[in-house]
Length: 573
Ligand SMILES: Nc1ncnc2c1ncn2[C@@H]1O[C@H](COP(=O)(O)OP(=O)(O)OP(=O)(O)O)[C@@H](O)[C@H]1O
Image (cartoon, rainbow, N blue to C red; front, side):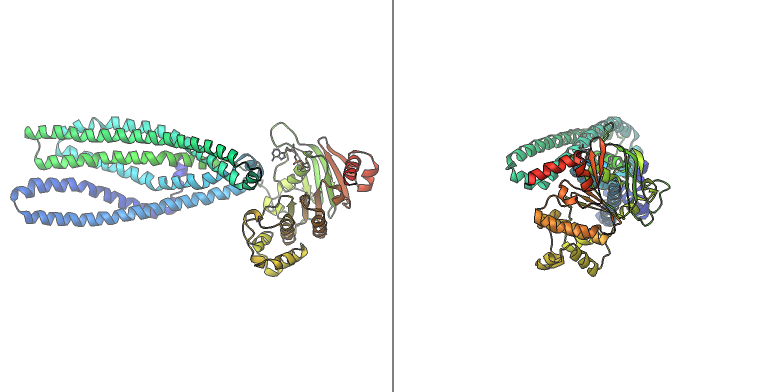
């Protein structure tokens, strides 16, 4: 883990070196002050020459100015180093997240992931800056002060150092305790974020059900838990600070007693005593520093562990080693004995065989939960089939790159996801480098142009989060316009019009019919009236593919389709 952590420093070696050197020099200068005091008290003071004391102090002032400047560099550049590392990690994490498949996002909450990409990484950035540098300086000052104290009076030094192992043991003990506490705290923050994200995201449902009270109660419970966990972490931190404070101050007192005794014995001068006392503080300051590191380390380490955990999550769907670019598809699709299950054990699809010719429009119907969407989700490899294979124009889809496969497959779903941006940005999502003319053509083909023209800011109209400022039909048309721009060879329409009223549905069906022209189209529909004209209808039940044929053929067969048809017809009449 340490090696992986330090690998992030590699691009910033120069920055790190400068920062580190400045910190080392500043640390060494700290050691100079007690020696200067020793010199002033023992050498200059007895001579009675106050001018020479002023000269010495002026020299010391110059040293302080330089040290102050070094501190500026250490603070500013050091943080720059931390921020750079944090930014790199964030980019890497985002990159990796985008590679993880649908299954990962099915099982992980958005709030948790948000927490990882924000809070966790901020703490890692802090650790990256303070970590190695502070630790090194702490150790260096400790050793420097130790040697100087030994030089002044070895007996007094040895007496003082007896306490060191106890301090270190305490530091390690609290570090372990705090790592655990902060790991728990971070898990809690993630849960908390997730709850807030869920409630705010679903605020319309919350308000529609007038369930604000219920949500408040749930929130309060999480909020209380969060408070308790945080409080616990700070309690341990406070214990640590208290004990370390007591220890360091007791040492001062101890040195005061022993030092005066040595003076009385004639083994220590006043100047040496003053220097020793100051060095004791310099010596134990790193221990305070180590405590401060202990405060920030567990947060950083817990964050880094979670970061690594995420980075090490292998995408369940990825390009195979020998994957090649997909050729331009004609659109002949074959499912050969394809099986699939979302969770271990239960199979949603069992050895499905299916052939769809290029340019054909095939509709999937059947009871809810039978697996229609699942069949279609396997084609762009949102999930990987557990058995069998799917080919397009004879090419096994698992042998081609995901990007080149997905570029040629377009999906329009019932629940259209629009980004918080303008109409233009949302349509252009189908082809990021589309020209203005192409975007308008797509809008016209999706019969969206009059609506856009009527909007106050036309294409530049902001549509709100997830397109809340648009009607269901308008959202659906944006999704269709996107598809015209994307121009895929294979099209999947997953209940694309089922949320619309009959009139809007009829109008959008027209756009979809136009969109399907010259493409292999897979349609999932519950309302049979919308797929009557499909070239072929496939009836999917929990037993697999039960029937296949044209509308007329299936109606006359008095099977599942015929029963569905009769039931819907009865409902309508
Ligand atoms: N992401 C998922 N994780 C786990 N199980 C899932 C997931 N998506 C679907 N399922 C399960 O797989 C089965 C098939 O679902 P699928 O959505 O393919 O059915 P469907 O025929 O399209 O249903 P509907 O007509 O209601 O949309 C269902 O039992 C469903 O609960």
